[in-house]
Length: 413
Image (cartoon, rainbow, N blue to C red; front, side, top):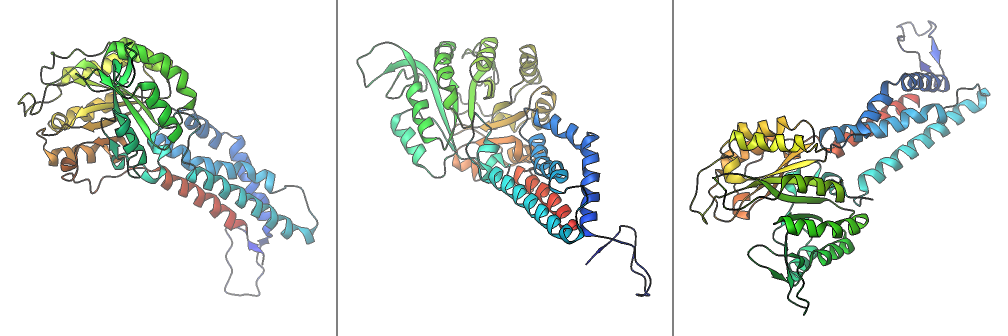
């Protein structure tokens, strides 16, 4: 049945002539229109600007939305030939080309949505599409500093990210007394697991992301050659963490890592990794301190430090739950002022910390679940109320892109 041209309605008098166009002509017109849009740069400029960005939240989601749509739009002039065709073949050719375009489009979308593995270091939102952009749903294994803990975490079907500490020390299962980067938390200086072993085993598994918490300048400097050597095999999320500034509450007893050396070294070794940079803290039952907050000066100094070192990698700020919950405006300002890199929060807490769960929930909701990682004890996690929090997810945007393209296809049939 022929299609009515846009702008014409069937009159009440069915005998009145109706201006129509064939399906092939409609497809041809659509193809030419889209081609002209493409050549004019209407879609191309947006696509290129998004595809070259390093962000992975809202901007990444928009690029995911546009890519399947643009694939179809760009393919329209190819699959819908603009040259004249014998009338008896027009419908057949149009249907065939439309079917091919649909198959190609759906195949690309399906591959993008189902592919969990990365060809390089990637972001958790890409590696775990089942999150649908909600980073608070990531399940963390904390202090994975022994072979037993590593095997346990890797065999868990729930755990997504492994957090482990790196110090200089000795392996307790060898006679070698040379100090190397090992997995342990201060004050421990012995372990049955070296950093290199940790990475090799994680690479073979390939189903979890990792967060390496470097506890000293020496530990990080000695780890750089290992990270550089194994970088090609890191095809999952990698966070490089260090406390690079002194923080609350007057946390001057523990020296932070050298900020300049850490930031430069991280970029030199794994530039695709997420920089997890925070403050030393003196808080919780260990110090019998239950009140405190990140000061305006401490937050500003972090932003200034990253600017001075020209950081462009994605950044996550690890903030202690009990301290961050006491100054929601300050934490929001921290993220807002980090205009040079895509910034998220990683909210962490130690057992026994005094935390206002209601205020912490409010902070997470205001920032957005697509920009907050939550690594806290189970009892605190159970008290959080994140209902009403939202995320612009890649899966939703991909489906919208597919729907738009298929809508155009359906108009041609």
